[in-house]
Amino acid sequence: MHDLPFNFVDYEGIKRLFIYFYKDVQLVTRNTAKADIIINRYKKEKEMVKSLLDNAPGRISFTSDLWTSLTTDGYMCLTCHFIDNNWTLQKRVLSYTFMPPPHSGLALSTKIHNLLCE
Image 1 (tube, helix red, strand yellow):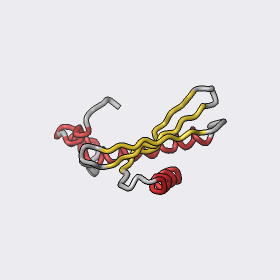
Image 2 (spheres, rainbow, N blue to C red):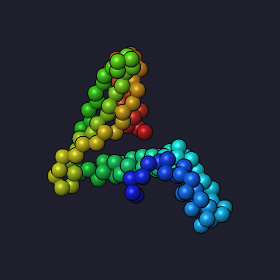
Image 3 (cartoon, rainbow, N blue to C red):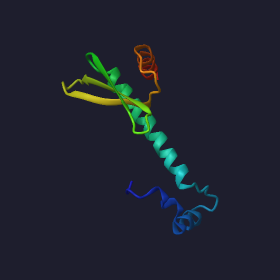
Image 4 (spheres, rainbow, N blue to C red):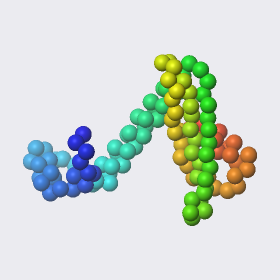
């Protein structure tokens, strides 16, 4: 809410304040708070994208991009493009994922299919 760092919950004064207001409070670490926020945000964004795609009045175009990192790990980004109800071109990244070799047509189509099913 106020762009505070996740380690805000580790400040001794904040811990005392929480305990003062509610003696039985279950304090969490910054890693737990961060994980909860990120997971909830991910689920919310995923549902929003699903809703956008469900309500798209026309076709949806998918593109994928493959590249190799300096450590020779392969990655793939799956993106969709569509026109919304207001005739505005929309673009959403659906997935950014590790793509192990081989990068054959069969491997790529299987990976894309699995990502779209997810």
